[in-house]
Image (tube, rainbow, N blue to C red; front, side, top):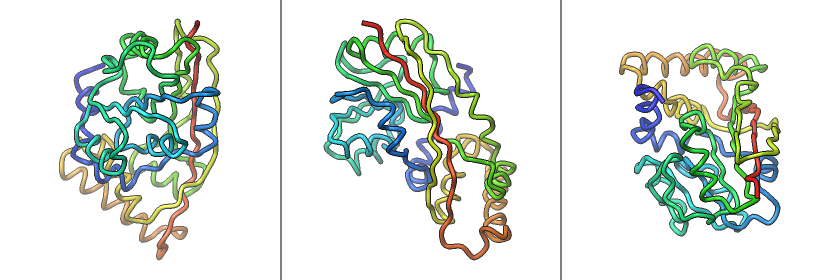
Length: 244
């Protein structure tokens, strides 16, 4: 990972509150697909403020949330005080060997060094355990969402998430779910403010970007005078099984 990319990966702490307010959760169908049958202990790796952690805890799973940013884990622990939250990275996971049935990585694999992370994930997984990666991507077939992408950067072709998961993982599979997240205009602004590009941009660039989003909200025919927005997403899932 380059130094600038590393710095961006650790930039979210200053926007942890905006991240929690603006970022979407994950659809139940995607979580159903990612989890192996009979899973009880799950590692949410790169858990952030707990968007995925919350959905896992709601299922009665024993979850450990690991993230490298203290501010993000502080937000997570405020809403999930009974959930174990630990500072750590995918390259140095602070768990014992063979301790979880599944490792899920939501919206974070692109920040990971796979050559170092894959052996660590294999170490903490039990034989036959599952590694699952998941990303929410905006569905830019809708006009105003496409306009938003012109301001903040397109989510692009979901095919870019076709990552390779090498040995000792096998039986790699891919799945995607189309769904809609409902949010307020302010939550959309928080969503944009929580993006690493926006966080790490100079103040004048960040201000200009958020003003352009406010202008879109005020002038686009599908958004003007709306108190609620329907954001379409395509959630992309990749999973593989640890060989016995």
